[in-house]
Length: 137
Image (cartoon, rainbow, N blue to C red; front, side, top):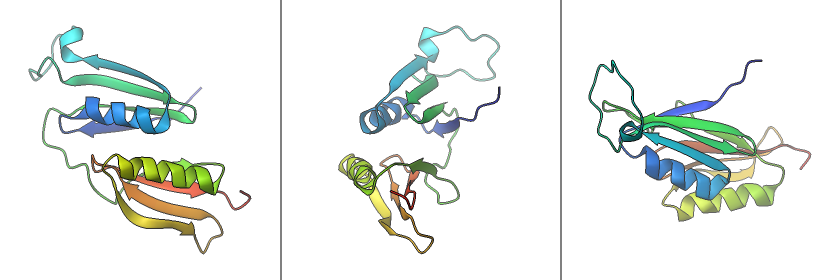
């Protein structure tokens, strides 16, 4: 069986980002730092507190990631996390959680020409979250 999960490389703040995502989305968070694991033969020497691997198991899927060992640009509109929720109220509530956590609105959450509610918010880490509600909601 094949499954797809999102993976985000953060510039040294993966622990903070994943804890924030758990607060916003819920779910079960698993974090592993380089200091708590033995990974031999690495082509770099990571800080012991850097996140080697993180997984957030949410009701709707898995978000995975880690701290990058080089400078990575995170904020961009070339990609986004797409959250499809059941109701407009649920969509608005998630946007409010991202905004309350230091995010900024990119595109207002409103009825789109294609018949569903849609909006975009950047979280405080620079990741864009697109929110969508199917037209039947």
